[in-house]
Image (cartoon, rainbow, N blue to C red):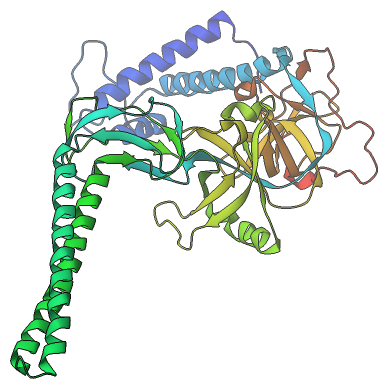
Length: 455
């Protein structure tokens, strides 16, 4: 019920509300506020004259004509407020909105996840012995091969030790020659009785000692050679070198926190990402069926404009679920031709999980997240919007693919969504008010009428 109040009615309503306010305020000082208004309307309590004082022991009665004025004023005020809202909706012009026509399109379910480019091998090169850098044999940022010399440390003391060890080996070998000769002569003389068997045993012991001395000297030479090799630091893996940690003249030690340089293998390279808990079974099934192709795309690929960076294969799926997020870590391996994938980069990983199925396609802006389920605003044939719950099959390239709730050809609102209410009239930017479905292709999905709200 609605209408416009006259000047007298407005005045009467204001006077009645004012009396009620004064009475309720005074009464609330002695009784509960919720009882004050009830007693006023029932006529059991009155209100004081202007400037008067309440007597808590006196049961003041409100004259009946005052009660009638107050009640009538409240009724008129409430009727005016309710009627004004209805009149405002009827008088409000149709809202201008942007729309998109739902279209049928093939959609293949897939997993799109953020991944981090990770080298298959990343080595922080450190010295294995103390020494001073005398030469750097590469330029930082250069590609190096496995075994290539990178740093040269001062090796003069090590070379001297090696020479000493080799001299000791030569001396041991010469002593061994002498002992073997003495043993031969002793064996010849003992048969003729010129020396005793005890002397022969001594010669044999000396010959054995000489042979052992040779083995010890050879070990010392090998140790000196190993120590010398530590002073020439070589690349343990092939890859791209990073920033130098030390320069020529610096003294380095194995316990230094900063490495000499870090080498990252760039080809092949891996991308580490997380498989959500909801997709683990699908990914495992796809891996069991055969090789699973993985596509690497830049982060702005969600708009559909970014090209594919590389194509590889799913190489690893962890055997443990992360208790923090319920997902499983996975790695995809790429050949990385041209070094398009760089260690540490954050990219999108696209992993197909099934075959293509016909769905209803809409822009992402059209689908809103509701308290219980996603929904869209559909424009009916009468130009009014209807809130409709939808089932989302997936998202890709800035589009949402719906499994239910919208039929191809329906016009769906894409902007001004927060201002809409069920039953509002709208007009589109192209001047159309009719949002009913167009001619549907054979086999196209129809909207479920049970999901519509409003109208």
